[in-house]
Length: 389
Image 1 (cartoon, rainbow, N blue to C red):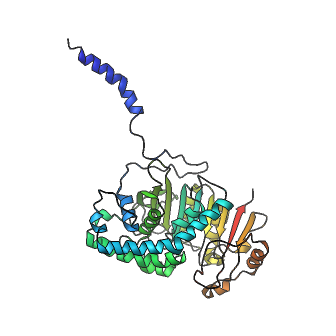
Image 2 (image 1 turned 90 degrees about the horizontal axis):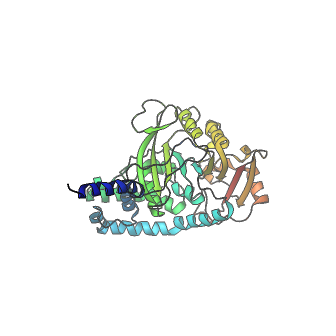
Image 3 (image 1 turned 180 degrees about the vertical axis):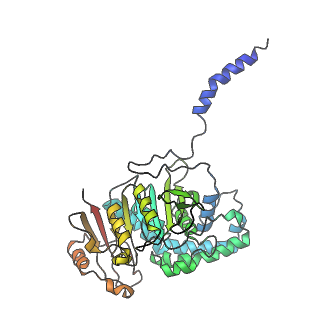
């Protein structure tokens, strides 16, 4: 009788449970939704490097050694693109974000599992992350389409370089002024695979040192739940994109969702979006450069949604009207020096806010926030509102 076989079977029997429990570790820690969230855990079924590779190519932040995009990245045109982007990034925009980081550490409470809401954001994910770097979920919306999911590997070198040429006009003003102009966004965004909302968000994340783990197109169904793109048709459909990102293998996952959305009163999309917001825990909200839309009665629904669903709001004067913050419901803190609106918004001057900032400001605001960068006499202010228990 062959005695080797029973011995091998015995060894395998002993080792099999050990192999199961001590197998390859997950690339990312298991995510647990915070209390009050109906959004579900952040999961990555199968990791693929293609999303981060595309983000790194768009952002010119370096490619893996075995990347098939290295030939395109070795061209003179790509080198010129990288030089231009590096210069723009290292100027005003990056330095302004660093100042926000430092201010945040001093003035805002930490919040690891926060849901952050950034209305009228466009693709500007980095201001949300500058104020709340540990946010678990970030909710954003704007009028611009997502532009689909860019995948650089599917494009030849000529198309890759042509797409990069279109990216600069979509970014240059923002990198110099720290806000997006809606008309410019509608003109430039989505004209090629890299200039959609998704591509620009991937650019920002990679530039700030994040790994783009996964990106997918999504929609909201009739109950306000997230579903796969293409499953919801007709009036009221809400299209969006979900990006999962991290600081690298072994670090926690973060999730950003951007929806293309009309939030004017009577919009057929609003009921679904409101139901989706109800599935989130209460928000830490930031608002900037919001065109004073919520000063109009035609945007009262989204204004009330933000006030009811937020535990805190950081904003400039272009967000929710100052008179909407009832002293009985909100604790208010003021920073900086009020500057009257730019001429195009001159009718939106708020004398009560100007007086409150003058009386109660905690001191100068060390960073630019909102409209007006480049004006010689520009000063900036910020209102930080916390809902009372």
